[in-house]
Image (tube, rainbow, N blue to C red; front, side, top):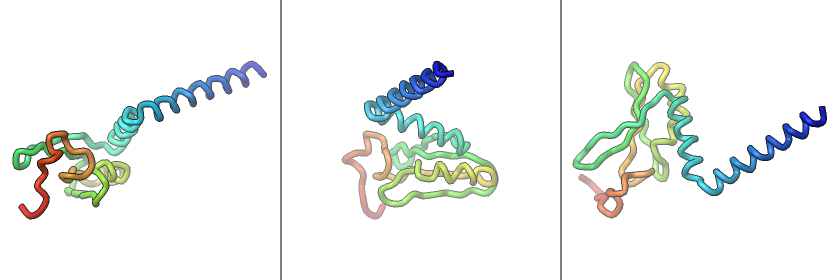
Length: 117
């Protein structure tokens, strides 16, 4: 019995250290894995469309009446993924990326016209 307990502690320690190394050494990889899990649970797919010559990312999923959830300042379209898990059961949910916020494509940087269009 002692060997099983020691083995369980060692395995837990190794897994914990490995997760810590990934999280602290490669945070983008850890966040990407979490994001993929949220997308899967929410039942949405990452898509994009071209608007005024710019590629705009968005999530879409579910069926029924359409709900468009637009995030606030300093956030991104990812902010509604956990909420969407409950909404996609009854609604078609669209989570658009707002230009200048979140993670826009690299070519937007420096050329985003702010102000009325």
